[in-house]
Image 1 (cartoon, rainbow, N blue to C red):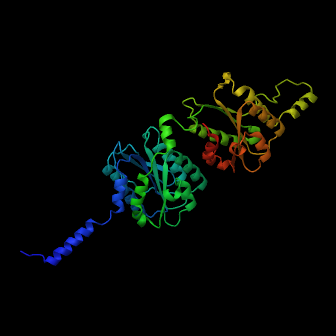
Image 2: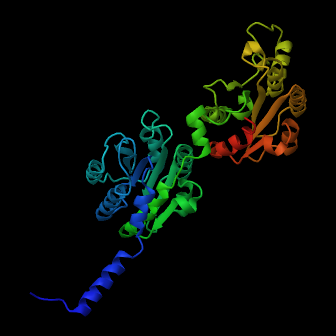
Image 3: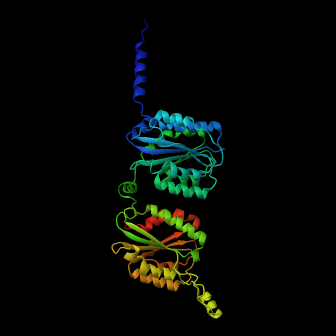
Length: 420
């Protein structure tokens, strides 16, 4: 029987003690942090033609390995995966699998589709399909992890889609390689982007961030606004009721711009507490009948010509007057107990500033709180300041262009929802 020399035994004992006393690696930290942290997690993988098939396989392995860091189960963390090239493809949903092995098997089976980098379509697809309200669990944090190695085909659309997605989920952006656009990645990632943005030099280095990414994801908590939405609906209007009117003059704004504004308003209402009746919303787009010439109303050519010349180009003054007299009455759905608020959209100098400001002043004297959304650089500051309630800086929401209108939603809500 061979006997180990005493010195060898001592060395062996020292080595065992050294290994056992070594600091825990990041993987151990990730598993500890992620315990008892239910979440809805969507991985969104770049499947475009710019990715070499060997690198795509590395991306697949990375996402599969990430699964091991989370406690998977129907009442714990659920994982879904989507991919994108020229369009978004939902590979499997949050409710497809309830254990880690099935999820990893499904990930390994995802093919590379090839095509362009239509990131905006993928972000919209995750928001409207993968995170559909009938799929996600109330009161559980929603996380999206986006992996991409290049610039999207439309940076502006990607920025808009990311903004909408970030209203519903915490978004991580993982940039791979040197062809990514840092500004675009920051637009995709939630704030602070330094916390939610990762970058590696190539696909082979993805493994170097997987534990840190998992730890950061598992530290995400529902914020106060999300808890409020789970318990009592959207925060804007949770504290106090309001009757809100939106005013725009299509004859001044133009049809295309008017449609942009109506889409913006429709999106805004998702953040108003309307279902509980706290906020009621209405809209005026013109003063009914102003300047109309009916068939046969005039028979004399001179009278007809005069009527045409007197047809108003803008009826904003009449609209503000109607707002004051009719919009907040009980028969039109108004409530005496509610805060009366109105938002006017302008993109140029007022056509008849004296009439509009005069009616605005009367409205404010009747406790109507007036806001203006000023689009572009052709507006006149002195007119806006005379039009809105005080303090003027909170009641004027400035937007650079119609392209940026959708991006201004967080700023609008921040200024408009004070006290609601």
